[in-house]
Amino acid sequence: MNKKLLLILPRNERGFWGKVTNGKAGFVRLSLPVLASLTPSDWDVRIHDTRKDPLNFDDPVDLVGITSFTAEIPSAYAIADSFSKRGVPVIMGGIHVSALPEEALKHANAVVIGEAELVWENVLRDFEAGKLKKTYLAQSQCKMEGMKIPRRELLDRKMYVSCFYTVQATRGCPFNCEYCAVTGVFGRTFRMRPVAEILEEIKYFHEREFFFVDDNICGNVSFAKELFRNLIPLKKNWGAQTSITFARDEELLDLYAQSGGKYAFIGFESISQVNLRKINKQWSHANEFGEVIRKIHDAGINILGSFIFGLDDDDETVFDETLDFIMKNRIDAVQFHILTPFPGTRLYEKLDTQGRIIERDWAKYHTGEAVFQPKNMSPRELEDGYYRIFRRTYSLINIIKRTFRSSKGIGFRLALNFSYRKKALRMPKR
Image (cartoon, rainbow, N blue to C red; front, side):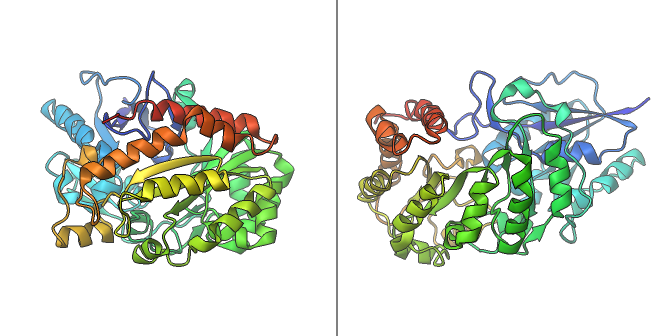
């Protein structure tokens, strides 16, 4: 009889981003579908997303695997403890577990540190032999050639309202921003899948739209150009995260648009060059933002911008100044985040050393609560400013001013803005 493997995605009840309401989520996270694809065929694999349905801990299962972001880790630990009480072995992995494996081992039989592709076969083989180790460390970074296709058929398609098809073309980021957890797990070495293999995966998508989950799709310019040229004949629409530097290369910008790049998620983070320098993002030039935004808009690409509040050069004026900047440049949609020192980042080490971390309830590490002492305002003032700019950005009048900048793509912009407006309306008024 085949052994039964249950792969679990936990939930966070506090956050505004990634939180599921009415059983619906945004994008598909690929970690569990990838693990399922790496599991031998003599295992029965099931993926359970607890953001949609609660778990039945009495279902018969031989092994449980859990991955988690920091904000979800309390839920992940509670799930692990419940299975452990029933005698079911639990394996945990992901960014938080990789940063704090000893903490996770208080709840799990074994942990995976780093990229699970490199050790998953060993984990299962050891389990079958009754020789499960406590720690499985990926000694290197996995090659990007010949990667398994994620088992998307194990997911509930009806759960995802934004974009069911997500794909990974690269790993790592050439930059080393202080607050970012990416380089801690994936490193600064920029790794790329063969373009032919990416295209082969995309060709079988049953829908026209998809999203690259890469941290920086344009991290290697020559690779990005090759990829975009080959995407043109597929006539798909897509979005991706990219650094603002992609707009400095006119050919790259044009290919992004020609290949179906409908929108770009760009981390502006701050309109203060002092802040950008302090977080090691000095390659991003705040005085060029307006011109770069215009170029991207002229190319027919929508911008989903991201800003972080609570950086050391921020005071209470940052919220009004940032909103003025957004409205002046008519950025199509925006995400806001409170600076959050995730374990494993240089920011966490710095603030911990300075004694400025005031909260270690990981459930609050969802970038919507102040878990540290800001330099030029109180935690309460930081949170109140964050809530206020969210509500003002997604007021009806400000949505209209930004989305009606052009008739092209207006339907997409309106849908995105009204989706974020729902979140903004849930923000506290204090």
